[in-house]
Image 1: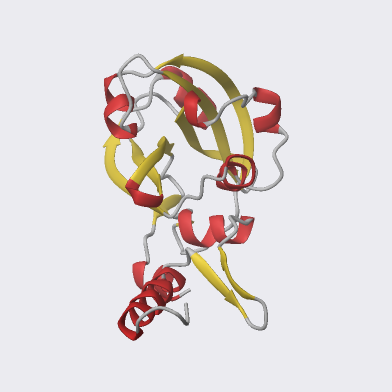
Image 2: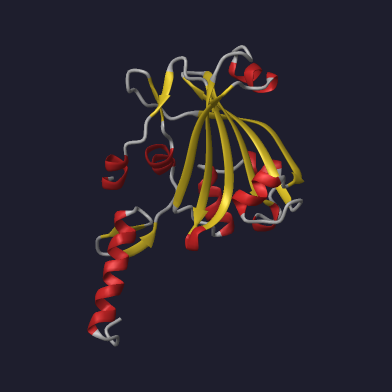
Length: 208
């Protein structure tokens, strides 16, 4: 770095400062600057936006419902920037709050980016799903894009959430991106909002 022109050094330091501010990098005094690790705390505070109606927030527990290989449909292909019909993994999870299922997740990831991933290795992971991507495949999720809508769940999702199929739910479609805006995961979440709601506090997230 010292051998570069002064303006280049300034630009690099500015870029590093921006990555630190966005929590992509973390500085450790006396050690240096490192890529942020996807710990449970980071996942909870930075990516999990479901809170109780009175503002309470608790980490969810996870239950793996199914894990299978399939072919990418039109939506998955478009959101993940892959070819329609390309091999993908489709994973269904139930997320529980206060021991009750509140969220049904469908996760779609390209099989080519996650070779040799199995149901056993996914279920036995240590830490978060994004932590698995990072530790095993070197894929670091640096940002997400979410679209929100309302819908009625199908019979299976309603059964998992313990509600009637006529009950409206919040639907969150999230695309997770790694470096260079490369999409790596499409996640659709159906949320029972009887006792919970969606909260996105951008200022708090950016300042954390």
